[in-house]
Length: 293
Image 1 (cartoon, rainbow, N blue to C red):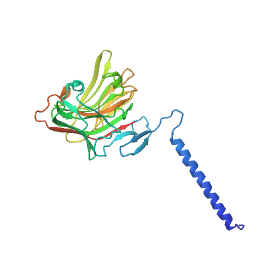
Image 2 (cartoon, rainbow, N blue to C red):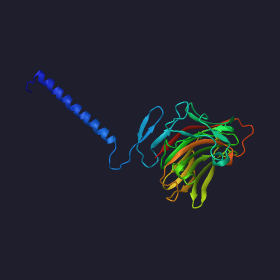
Image 3 (cartoon, rainbow, N blue to C red):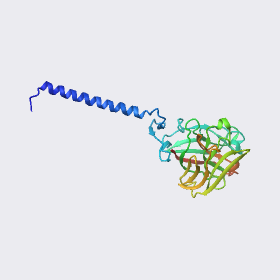
C-alpha cells in the first residue's frame, strides 16, 4: 500500500460525508414527494385528527379493516368541535316525532373517556325535559364502511336513545329522500331490544325496513353497535352478531352518497312513548365511535 498524506485523508473523509449527505437528502425528498400523492388518480390517505392535534394517515383498502376516523372521547369537557356539532331546540313537531325534550349543548359532556348524553327533567324554554343530539354533519361525512359504536343505554321508561346516520344531502332534499340508517334504537318501554332500521322515499310514500334483536343488560353493560355499509348491502350488528341485512342498489339513497353520524337521547314521542312520572335523569354513555374502510 502506498503512502497517503494526512491532508488527503481529511479530504477523503470530507468527500465521503458529502456524498452521504447527498444520498440522505435525496432519499428524504423522494419520500416526501411519494407521500404527497400522485396525479394518476390514486386514492389519497385519509387524515384522522383529534382535539389534541394527533394525526394519522390511513389508506383505505375497501375491506373495512382500516381505521379512517375515530372519536375516543379522551378529552374532558364538551364534545370535540372538530368532530361534532349540535341540533338545538325542539325541532318541528318534536323533531318530527312528537318528542318532549329540548336539545341543548350542556347535556352532552365528555368525562373520564366517555361521552355522556344526559336526559333530564327540568323546565327549560317552555319544555319539561332537556337532552342532547350531536352529529358529524359538516365535520365528517363518508360513503361506505363499517362503523362501530360502543355504548351503554339508558334504563328509564320513556327514553329513546339512538345511534344513526342521515344522508348528507338532507338540507337539500329533506327526509326521507336523503335516506336514514338506524344502527341502534331502543324504545321507551322495552330496554332489552335494539332496533335496526333503514328509511327512504319510494315512488310516492315513505318506506322503511327494520328488525329487532335481544340485547341483555343493555343499560348496565357496554355493547358494540355496528353497521357495515357497502354498495351491495346494509348490515347491522350487535357485538359482532348480524341480525339485519338489506340489499343496496342504485335506486336507493344509500348508494354512493355521503352520510353523517348522529348520537342522541329523545324523550317520549313515537318510540319513546309514555315517560315515567318519576323520571328525573338518565344517560347514554358512548365509549368510542370508529369508522373503517
